[in-house]
Image: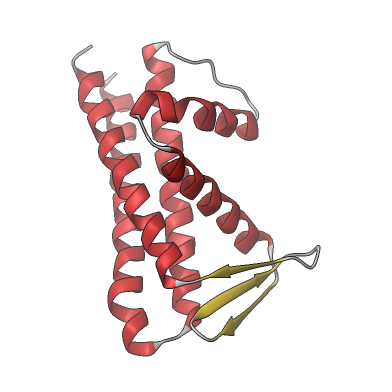
Length: 162
């Protein structure tokens, strides 16, 4: 279990680093430079943080015997979203922010076209739909991921007690 615990800690550390980076980009750098590319970089960091936290939570819950994981990552993500509210007492707004962050991150990774608008970064999807990213939405994502990070850390501490 020591190697597993180390791997889980590393996922938590990685997630916290990505959240911190995103927060720094949005709070410090973006106001100074007002460059929408900074918003996209922050989204990229938040997406990485969210993926790490989801992986961490699912692995902890698997070790505890609460869930069975699939070889299909989409099924595992669905398990996470079906259960996270119950596990961590998150409200619907938090769940909505997590889903939106995941969707925006995926759209950004898969999109070949982004462009700036006044105080926004815009992602154009292959189907012609657009997603707009602004500072306030990123700050909501940061707060929600910070909350999820704290909850995941509590789970990790409790896992050691088993």
